[in-house]
Amino acid sequence: MGSKSLGQSAEIYDYVIAHGSEPPDDVLRALQEETAEIGVLAAMQIDAEQGALLTWLTRALGVRRAIEVGTFTGYSSVCIARGLPEDGALLCLDVSEEWTSIARRYWERAGLSKRIELRLAPASETLEALPMEESFDLAFIDADKTSYASYLA
Ligand SMILES: C[S@@+](CC[C@H](N)C(=O)[O-])C[C@H]1O[C@@H](n2cnc3c(N)ncnc32)[C@H](O)[C@@H]1O
Image (tube, rainbow, N blue to C red):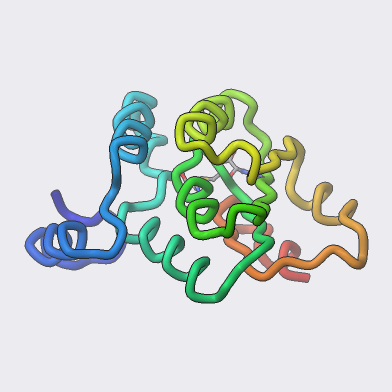
């Protein structure tokens, strides 16, 4: 299998996945397979090595509170939540009940439901409504590209 996003060869991709710190486990593999059934939109899901990087970054930075804009079926959220401490928290923003209902099932299956809160609304509205004192150690933005500048503002 070759990476869809980083442009490296299939051999290097397979090596990174086989020898990386967090190869996809049964939960993530099942999520990849179920997401693939959606069809062409499954390409929105992050790749396995990106997920491993998110888990590693979350752990290495000692992240306790994280936010994700664009959850889809949940792959990146599982990876981030796995890097958090037991009492850490991930706030997920998305507009799709349909796709995030799949994410909810995998959060449950991965034992991560207690660490993850989902808010279903356009991200700009959710972000504007956050209290001024709310802060996050890590933000992963993976939604509608044209709004990124406003998400960062
Ligand atoms: C590229 S996918 C996210 C992939 C996900 N990070 C993963 O690892 O599978 C983009 C997601 O952004 C959501 N989205 C699109 N526009 C949005 C908006 N204005 N506010 C919040 N979420 C939005 C879509 O519903 C979709 O689930």
